[in-house]
Image (cartoon, rainbow, N blue to C red; front, side, top):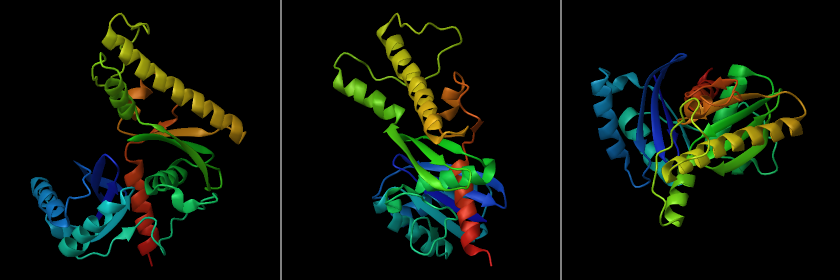
Length: 260
């Protein structure tokens, strides 16, 4: 069974993949100081709760946008599972995707993994929107080449900045408004909810409209990340919502680099 690890700026996601099925998913807060031994203790407990022995893991693939976290994840793979992991973005790892940029090494591993998975699963011209620490928009053409994208502040970063910079504004948790709820807030909290939520809907729809105009062809929109379902409730801009896109991409890359 494959252990797929996606180490982002906020969380590290661990998933067990068997064939085309994602059997388990776990996440832990990203901390570059966390050692391989600490990861192992945490992960072994979760495996036990799931009724699985650690010996079921016979392959590991890693993508990370946090370079300081990579060494400890490699230690986890080698020391506790006896595996040399496939690491996205390292020399010799075949991504199966042409990165049509002047400096391809600058693109985050998670963005390439998402783009690859979206092209494999949905085909055609694509815009992949990932709601993570940052909100990213990645463009893939019909031939499967990565063409570039857009990086915007993530919604939780925006909320934190708003509360930190304005002394009288409270910290809030974003949520989708009820159907028929007025856009004009009657309280400070309602006004903040409306500004952040509908502001993000406007950002998403506006940027995708500009991307489609620049591409010059219809482009499907694939959304992923924890907040994708939240925004899906009030926009028809997404053609597909796939919360497991990154894990599926990691499994594809692993298969490509280990199949004989």
